[in-house]
Length: 280
Image (cartoon, rainbow, N blue to C red; front, side, top):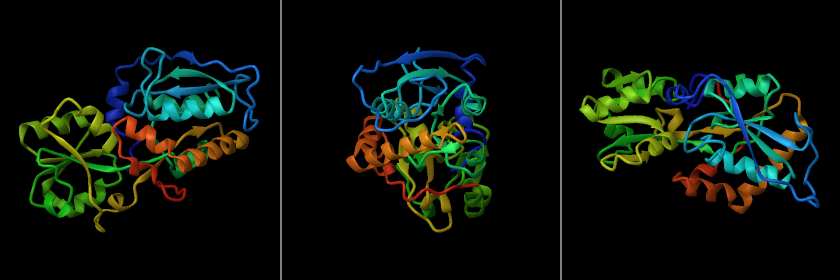
């Protein structure tokens, strides 16, 4: 579900609440007898500097005490590698440039594994997948059922081109989730399509709406093969990427990723990423 430079236009709206400036906070301390599982260099010796945009439930700076799925995973990796963490608050558009400019080692924010990002940064193996979700009052999940209705989506998602073909004039594309939600509440559309995580968090207080994973449909590729989430890192730092990948493999095997997703209201099945692949 590829979106512009970020996970979604929703992210841009959220990021607008932040200033263009960056701030930082730290977390954790390292025991003197801590033995790292791997050795790799970072910008600041012994510290992992991590850019944190605003995209709950994946990342939220939270006044220097970051929260979210990505935050928890990175924190656990840092602990295993005996690193303290310096959290750097950024706008969404600035999260990856903080890495490419040499100000951060790692970017968080539910970034997709794309060919373009792979050229500018090192990409870790998949952490989880971002699934296509339907927002409706009736819990609609099947695309054939949507064909009789008015459906909308935020621009930039991977499913938009295919859904345009399927839905024709019954499909509306919006610049952000704000406009889409307004039309959904006004009854101008009956179903809104969005990222499961973003939609679930945004609508957690609107009990009249259900957020459901869209069932697989051969006509819509994104419903069959979800986009994989990664942690973009300093280009050329193969040792750091290797260390992250080793930890991610362990977290997938021991159920840590599933547990973290569940704690944040996301489906455990999102941890089933499949083999690494690039989109775009």
